[in-house]
Amino acid sequence: MMVTPLLILLNDRWIEPRFAKISKPQDENFAIEDSKVIVAGFGRFGQVIGRLLHANKWSTYASNISRI
Image (cartoon, rainbow, N blue to C red; front, side):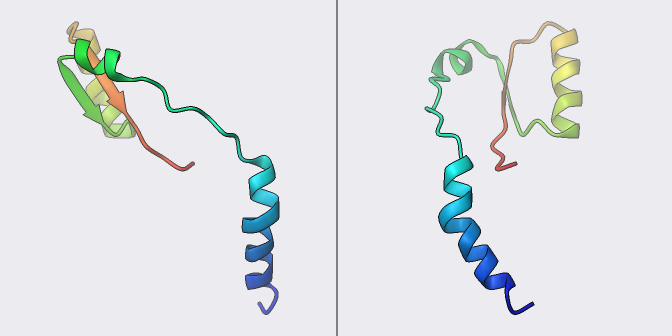
């Protein structure tokens, strides 16, 4: 238990930055402009709604911001 804060500090400063992938933000404006429905969050509920809308031929834009 005494070492845990030191391990977290070690992870945050040296280990995680080496394995983190740097990605450019994608230009998502084209997808939003063409969509009639925006689904914010694509978890269990968002997937069900997205499938229903897709089955009824609605154009959708799914936005999901997650750190996982």
